[in-house]
Each structure stands twice: as structure tokens, then as C-alpha cells.
Amino acid sequence: MIENSIYNTIINNPIYLCVVVVLAILLIYSALKKFIKLLVLVLVGIILYIGFLYFTDDKQTVEDVNKMINSMENGKDIIQDKIKNKLDEE
Image (cartoon, rainbow, N blue to C red; front, side, top):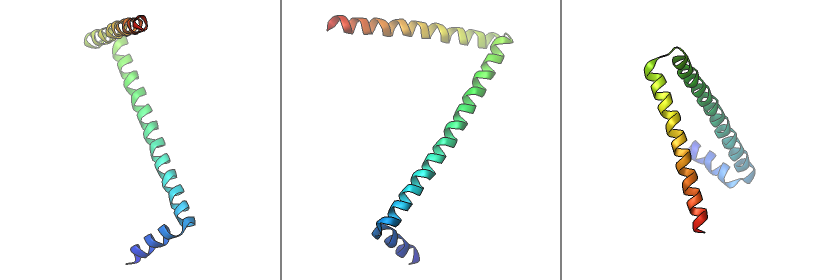
């Protein structure tokens, strides 16, 4: 019953409602900020690990990285061709 009265007090009073909304936004912002920092650290760690494997001549890693680089170059060419075709049609 107490929770219901707190809820009604917050909903019915615009000042309390603004305070709760601001606190909720700050909580969400701080959680997202920490998640993004963690994500950046993990990505840096993965890149460093792949770089370590590449420079220590791990054959499978070197082949995979080279395939990925070649596919990115091929994809870039395909995208550029599609853009040129679209521009020529207009």
C-alpha cells in the first residue's frame, strides 16, 4: 500500500515527476556510458590479440586477415560500381 501511495504522489506532483525522470535519464546515461567503455576495451583487446597473432606468423590468422582485407576491397569496388550505376540512371 505504501508503494502505491508513493507512485501516486510522484505521478500527481509534476515536480516529483520531473525529478524522477531526470534521475532515470542519468541512470540510463551512466549505464550506457559504462557499457560503451567496456565495449571499446574489448574491441581494443581483440584487435591487439589479432595483431599479435598476425605478427607472430600464425598461418591461419594471416590467411583469415588477408581474406578479410581482400573481401573489403572487393566490396568497396562493388559498392562504388552500384553507386555509379545509380547515378548514371538518374
